[in-house]
Length: 241
Image (cartoon, rainbow, N blue to C red; front, side, top):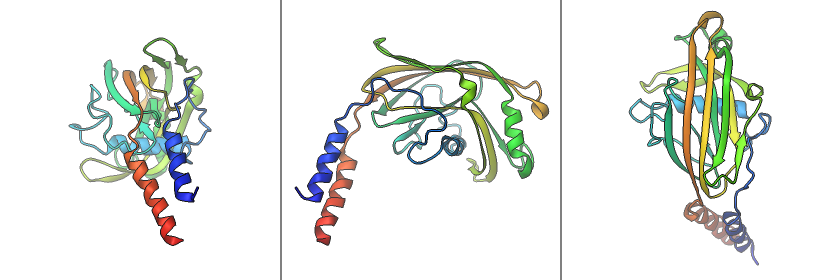
């Protein structure tokens, strides 16, 4: 069997492997796709701030825009602008690792303060957190994954560029409780996210909360694009020979 055939066979086998039926929330020190979860939290903030309200996943209350800007094997789930209960519906693949905040804050240069203060401001903005909850359950009741000790998942990221919908680019820093959920097997699931925070210092007594439900359908990803890529690699290798 030549190298091209071996690569194609390996891809076909990979596409037919089921995701774990015992998927778990990853420890915050575990890298995903070679990236730390702190760096992914910065990417999440960049993603969340990039789009105008009309198509923003954060302002979306139904899940219609959940796929906006989501490419690759890491799928961001949006937070919300306030504590109003939200239920979103989203479809993902068995190849997707979900990454999302339970609570998060973002401090921007020129809006919240000066560059040298942004990391401290993000921490003060997040403040003291409580009433935390995050769990995922398959609709047939076969699997429930609660996540305990959520405060141990707190991570800070900064400094990074944030592209705003009006075209401005500002430096930012973020703080939050971030979760990464391993790929799920085919099925339907419910993800619940709850949290409450009180700002500190310069944000003293600013109270905020989140109350988000996700109805998640997990499907086997279409192999077309991956097959074409692997075929291209195989043909290139044959030509080089």
